[in-house]
Amino acid sequence: METPICDFIDSYVKRGTVRLHMPGHKGKTFIGAEKYDVTEIRGADVLSCPKGIIAKSEKNAAATFGAAQTVYSTEGSTASIKAMLYLACAYAKETGKNEVILAARNVHKAFCDAAALLGFGIKWLYDEGGDLLSYSLTAQTLEKKLSSMPVLPVAVYVTSPDYLGCVMDIKAFSAVCKKFGVLLLVDNAHGAYLKFLEEDIHPMTLGADMCVDSAHKTLPCLTGGSYLHIKNGVNEVIGGYLDTARSLFYSTSPSWPILYSLDKLNSYLAGDYGERLNRYVLHIDKLKAFLSGSGYDLKGSEKLKVTLCPKSYGYTGEEISDILYNSGVEVEFADKDHVVMMFTPENGTKAVFTLKKVLAKIEKKKPISAAAPGLSPRKGVLSPRQAVLSLSEEIAVNDAIGRVFASSAVACPPAVPLIVAGEEIDENAVGLFKYYGVEKCRVVKK
Ligand SMILES: Cc1ncc(COP(=O)(O)O)c(C=O)c1O
Image 1 (tube, rainbow, N blue to C red):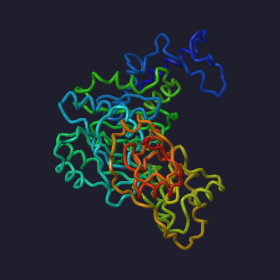
Image 2 (cartoon, rainbow, N blue to C red):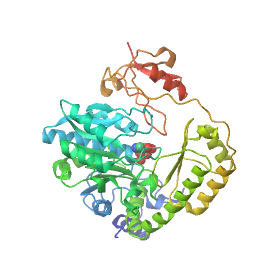
Image 3 (spheres, rainbow, N blue to C red):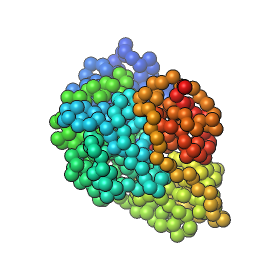
Image 4 (cartoon, rainbow, N blue to C red):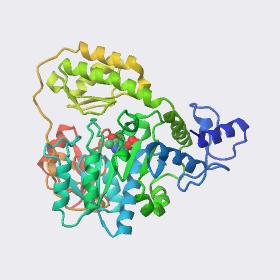
């Protein structure tokens, strides 16, 4: 597979051109990536309206992922998600649909921020089980919800895989969405690699209309590299809005080392990556089977993620994370209830054996019975946009019941809001704040 961005930058570096342009390091080595770090020089392209090497590279990525169009971001899926939602609003305008999105509540904060910036309406889908980070949404529930809505939303929005590694039935959701004539948008930030599994379960393959992947989370890309994929048909309706989507949410100074990395990835993925991935997944399958057999509770079916729910083993997630840290292992995320560990083939098998060895040595104790509070449906008082743009003040969580939440800031990771701006703070929200150690919160001023 061709690498037009890498080729251009490599030849620029080779020529030894005097750099009388940004950035200020001028290609000299400070941390090592500077030589790749250029700007919109002659022959380079412009990420906000690409027509040259970036457009060519994006086309290669689209072919790799089976999309009609793929749009790069160097500011992560956080930017790509906002662009995707802007395009969904444009689709609504073009097709006379309602600018409302029906979203499973365990969204990343980028969704809520997009609602505050773009002003679209939200209808939430809550999970009866009420786990904050993971939703067990079924196609039947989705169909029931859509049937009950007097005015249909323009799109359904789901997060799959979620932070804990749970994967939703995108194929079934796609069939339901088609039946109702609404778009299916997927936050697939954690699932770029799903395309290369023996059974390709990438959302674009399973029928999503648009989807966002963080290339950097599961593929060997520099942090910040992300894709927005758009399906044939949808692309024809919103293609004219693409440059505005990029321009609204992307910097005018994109990172060229990240573009280089995204471009290089196309040729890497066209090589033997798929075979290596599928061989590696067998090691993770075995590790999971060993851990289950040793008494650990595991969550999620995502192949490269190992999520422990260690309270039943007698430890909080934070305690397990500390033990691992002291044994030379740094995990992705830990809270009271979970430890999330992310593998890729780049870890090699030694990492699998190390984790197995450390976890096997931990002695099982009496289970911890205290459970996390569930998430109750909230009362929306203002729109996220009205609330975020209101005069606001910080108060103690203990004094917050009945007040309207006004902030878009949430703990990251996992950046899943306990409460969304514009919602009334109730006892359940206060319980969640306390459980996760939040003492103060921002509310709309009276
Ligand atoms: C589910 C989910 N969506 C979106 C994002 C944002 O992705 P990025 O870090 O690429 O901006 C994250 C980040 O962790 C995430 O967990």
